[in-house]
Image (spheres, rainbow, N blue to C red):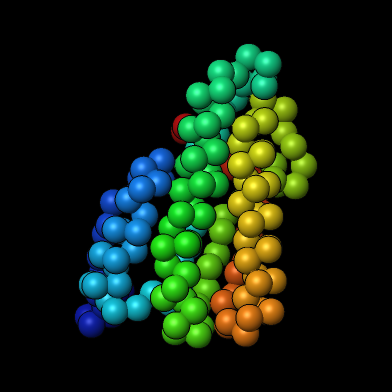
Length: 145
């Protein structure tokens, strides 16, 4: 049962549209005044060996699984730094740790996101910003996709 005072706001967001992330962050901040938790859960994958995969598909996967998330985090980072406390949770994949065949672009993009967030966590520690960053790496999932 939902809390009667709960506030729900659905904001459609397309991670491939990197140039809209700042606008989307501003919309949320305007609506709620703050962001305490960001859950990076969106993504896409491929099922093709690297030698058969067109570069455009690799670029698409990289934009959605890595660059879009980074752009959104960077849009919210000034807010996170000013509030002094926030959480970013990233849904990753074991493919970011152990490259998976026919998931070459996906593995690379997920690995990049994990590496970026690990480095960002260290930067926050060094600069005294209380920003908790967690990377959850899932195994295989059954989906209709």
